[in-house]
Length: 409
Figure 1: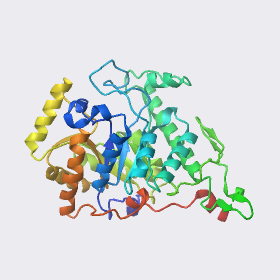
Figure 2: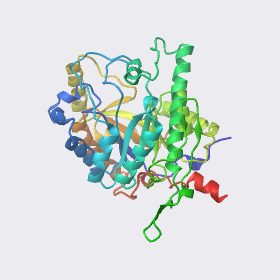
Figure 3: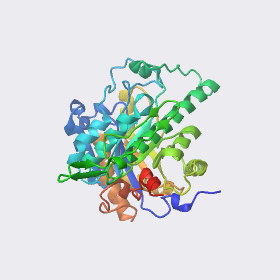
């Protein structure tokens, strides 16, 4: 059995673009660039300006990074470095603050499922969907850091010593299974109010139809949630869920629960292999007929001349004291060269890209004012926003409420 081609949004839809916002940029020395505004990093205006710039470029959405512990240069342990950005604002609250200042772009904050209650997240993202009038999304993430578990005190997570060890693989698989359950609870809670559950009839004094509020009665290894939510069904019905994956276990989470998956191919053959694996997992999850976008992540250093982009990367590396490396492919060059690469990758079955600006203050404007016009000249990207919701921008229909459909049957 193979996936229905209609489940592959890359087949007929235009190219999609998102930007991943993380502090002053993805290069650890980005905050030292004059354009980076490090003194404003923890202000609302800083984030509003970044999202406005992304909206100027007609991008589908921005993601906002988050975490449950200070940033670190180590894989799983905290560090004591003082020469890199440490500290964050809450991603969901940033998105809620920025939402009234924007009109079209999607807002997708990161949520760490491992230590966060799905009931809280369901109403936070539903609220964001109301505040943004249908432009909210969710990026789900796990954490295996023992220090972050210690912040909550509810359980311990053993330190990973060898990633390939069977006990490590079991731990990681359990964390991703937990994240899948987390998303399932969130999705059921979004549906726990039918669309017309609110009556608001002053004459009769009835505000809600209690028969159209539903218990979700979820029972899992980590969660037991009765419901219903306290927030009515979001304007989109189901705000898009997104997740990042690098291997089979996270690909399985993407296939089971996501509307958009971010992957990190380093060439087109690798991209084809990843897309094929996710599509196979999608069939195994019983979602062969459901649309699922697969975006490639790229870190970008952009300049008008390729030599300038490479020189800037080398200068930032020198400031950081070591060469920059990433889980994603790192690109340094011109907007036109990046457009060439995106179109090459697109042919491998990807429907879009999430770009990580190395220095947000420098590279984001070159995405919105350099890359986007170049793609428009090639007929590869929109010239105006064509929908009012994030699901609409992604070509995803508003889903029926599972409980209303069950009642109708």
